Image 1 (cartoon, one colour):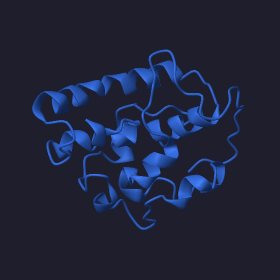
Image 2: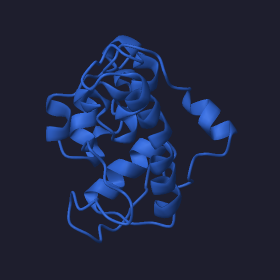
Image 3: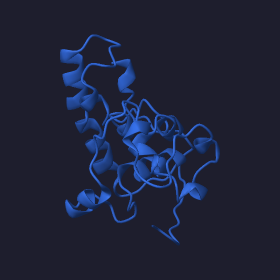
Image 4: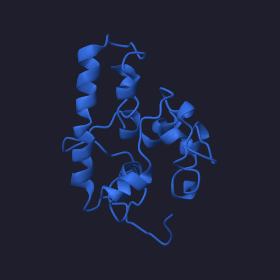
Length: 157
């Protein structure tokens, strides 16, 4: 999907918290939860540490909702994201690609927009907290499912 793209790592790996951005999950943890139905890293793994894939739930053939943490299709295809103009030119796969690169230490012009989008997901957290008992992962799974792909661990709500 993207060839010849290079970027500079300007902060240490994993130094992600600050400026109102404090993700619960690392990219490796997210992949182990089957984010994006396991389809995400199937053709770009060489860019990231091999250990991220050791426990990853992947499906090379297609997006498989059964691999998602809550087993629900709760996302839109990348084509929809492109159509709506939500994709940053340097990260053609969207938020998770941005986050993986951010986690690795890249900083770019899109960081403020992406962390703002991350904060906007708190509306899902508020609904889960308002309507569910803590730890009841069967409560509101459609609102919980979009959270792990955004680095929130909705299993702990």
